[in-house]
Length: 585
Ligand SMILES: *[C@@H]1O[C@H](CO)[C@@H](O)[C@H](O)[C@H]1NC(C)=O
Ligand SMILES: *[C@@H]1O[C@H](CO)[C@@H](O)[C@H](O)[C@H]1NC(C)=O
Ligand SMILES: *[C@@H]1O[C@H](CO)[C@@H](O)[C@H](O)[C@H]1NC(C)=O
Ligand SMILES: *[C@@H]1O[C@H](CO)[C@@H](O)[C@H](O)[C@H]1NC(C)=O
Picture 1 (cartoon, helix red, strand yellow):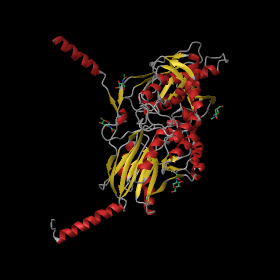
Picture 2 (spheres, protein in one colour):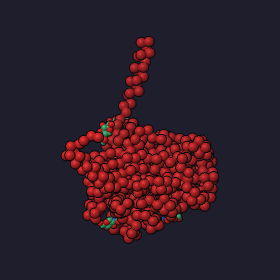
Picture 3 (cartoon, helix red, strand yellow):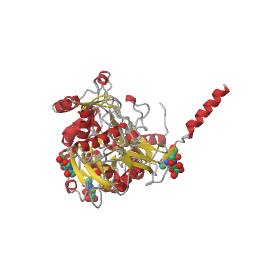
Picture 4 (cartoon, protein in one colour):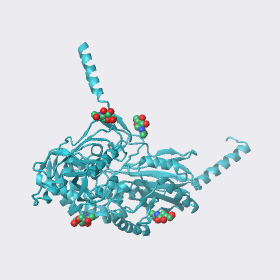
């Protein structure tokens, strides 16, 4: 046996005591999290779309609330440490399920998953604050969001279940959860009387309050995108962990299963100015993954350890039977919609935001055409002119998906246009119309590319190298009071009839489509998707093209909010070089 000097033995004993007491103090728990589930109650394809039979057979469908519930049960049962499950918002909207059963069903489905807390996403505001208040009254867990001013929204203000923060007890310790939402939420959703204020000062305010209440483990749970999450981790001294949403960011260390390309490691480690590390997590979207991280804190609330990886919810998780049975009892209406063929497309209907948010896209053209068509039908009896609204407009953010060539079902249309937007006829001056399109050219270069407009009945040339407000270099509109429609230069002081969705009429994305002095607005009493379905049904087979409705005189690639020009000369130079070389040969 080795004889240790007395002093050394003393130190060893002391170390042993220290490490054991550390062990006793170290509080461990498992954090599970999801975000942006967007009403994916049923399993989804690899990209979050409808799970097709062929993909299901190949084992290439994922997630769904049934699998998620099974995974939650598994970890809640198997883990020796307490389990905390948080939801980062945007559970509303995105499937026929939502369109039919709306917020009430979201509440029932979420209650079955039983998160410890949730934060508000942007889509939770999409059907107005009355619907939201009802939803919040139906959920059995707290909703947290700290950067909303609710003075002018009495129903929300009075809601006991909507709080700035909540305190959750697990294993004898208190965990504080502070909620936040993107400060620019207002113009991206239905009109309301909420003031959305900057996230960081409010988080700091309520985190301090939590500290005063003796809570020293603080999680910021929010819906503002990965970039903002990182900023919060850095700038909020009391925040120990950030659980995010909105940007559909998959974080994964190493190669992710399920063919997704991670945008960063899981967790993303942010170092605060004082050197402390803060893990930032998010788990893609559409229930495909469940985020899972184990955390250990000491008694003073210092984060000692953290480790995890999102779990791919694949076939190894059997969907939970009570969830499936519940869905099956409501499935008939959904199945009918998914079987109800409303038309056929011979071409790909491109609704991708990377296309529709930056320039003309064929799907945008077609939807805008369907608005004009609805107007033409309305005025069929009036032989005075072919229409009083030759122009149709829709914003890119209203188009939520693409459709592959083949038959189109009502379910497909609802997935593309899930918002219950009515369409309206509005009469505005040429100047106001031009200002709207200038605003569109401006929004195109902003990070959120939902605001760009798709048009029918207009021919516009944009030069994006010109300063803001002066980018339109040519602007023509289809005449309405003419025997044969043709394009004429837009006159600033003349009036034009335009068909737009209620979202734009109500000032969504900062647009103004109502004449200030002499407003003339007519409710067409038709949902945007019904106008589109009618167009499909009556045209039977469609093959919309990309035309030159919106021409770009200077081509631009968007990278990071700034714009970069692709010199048009490059291809020419390349060709010249190529010719030189072939000549030399
Ligand atoms: C947050 O707290 C403030 C008072 O500090 C209160 O006016 C507000 O309604 C609270 N917000 C929520 C969502 O409960
Ligand atoms: C676009 O605008 C830029 C800046 O004003 C100008 O230099 C350029 O010639 C314009 N391009 C065209 C095709 O008009
Ligand atoms: C427009 O008409 C529809 C259907 O008639 C109705 O439900 C809706 O409330 C109306 N909207 C407005 C703003 O009047
Ligand atoms: C955008 O990216 C370019 C090139 O990658 C870079 O030079 C520029 O600084 C970036 N701009 C912003 C606003 O981040």
